[in-house]
Image 1 (cartoon, rainbow, N blue to C red):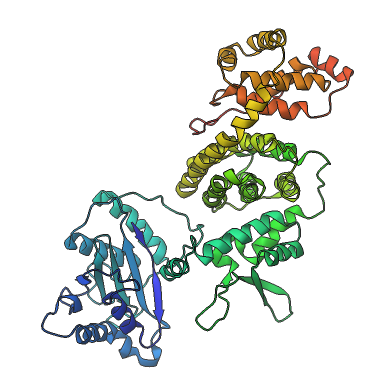
Image 2: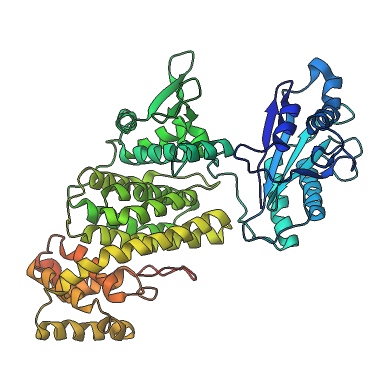
Length: 558
């Protein structure tokens, strides 16, 4: 159940609201509008007055609602109307008028509009338009002339809605923490539909601004990238001339007067205000960290592979920073991916965006390598043209998102946990598409049966508990190919396999051979160790890094 609060201003706000509630709607969507409840139980009902004209009854109802406001005259508040649509989910049972009336009373009581038993509370009505929703309209002056105590009414109403869902057996939504991006309004949805757009201007702007922020290293580059995608930027400057905020507008999105429709960054999402954008860009400025030259796919994969460690062993602020960086990486991946994968990756980035924000402040200091390496991929995605680079990155991203889901779960971040779970499904679909052709190509170059037996023997000795699964995995032949290629590059195959096995447990791997293939592919393309280093490892002077353990309940498939 979704309640949403809208405030109305102006001398005709009440009359305008009542006219809308009992009208045909913007697209004739209002079906049989009628009162189901009111402040006194007998307010005039324009939808149920057959002997009087509906407009006359609407005027009478608006006048009665407005009476406490008119009594204050010039002392009336700026916002005089409180309007709250309440909508059930499509799969919910159809509620009766009496049930909707009870829901309306609970909502206005929770919001402080009309506390239970308060005979001097605000005047209000609840209008039912269709099977699945009502609109509650109230005037924001109590009958005793005082203002209602409605501090944090949006939060209180959402909390009451969660209780109503339980009491009426409705679909239960996840409780939020006030960090979600603002949803598009009904007007924005209707405008997008009228223009034939799949998404609203607000949603398209949010995507473009997030991608520009993920791709940019400096503020100047950020604004240049926005300009390149057609986004207009209007800076809000203080008396000193310094930019304090920024508004964004899409090309062609205009008012009826032909003026651009600007959205403040903070209304697109809490982390898209100018101060937050500047703070994020500071983590990719040239100083003080420099990413060493190398394959950016490998660097991004290595940085993403460390995210589970940060989530399980770091403090909450550093962990939150890792989730922000992971979200930025997912924002840019669709731009670099093959056309067949773009839709799934775009969906993954869109839903994971919710998992990147919580009440915990993000420490971004440890995220520089990941952000810069992903930016390098965005600037030149041609490396690893066979798709192996993207497959390796998606492989570790699946694990990182699973850990993110678990991290949010144990902190009771319900909406963020659900968002990570949805992102995981989209990433799994993209991963399945990208890996199959790459693995087939690797399997065609598999080494001789004798070499395969040698690798299998070591595997049985190193991890007997996983050896059978790996050897029976369809990706086993691809794994032997990358082991042989690592040997050809000067690595010791046994050592590389041990390193791959020590990076992370295979307990949660759907395809252990495939997981090892990507690890060894990345390890094998590093510079081969010197003979002295290989001898030291064989003698046991260098202890392997213990694998990161999986969280108790991550849902992931590879």
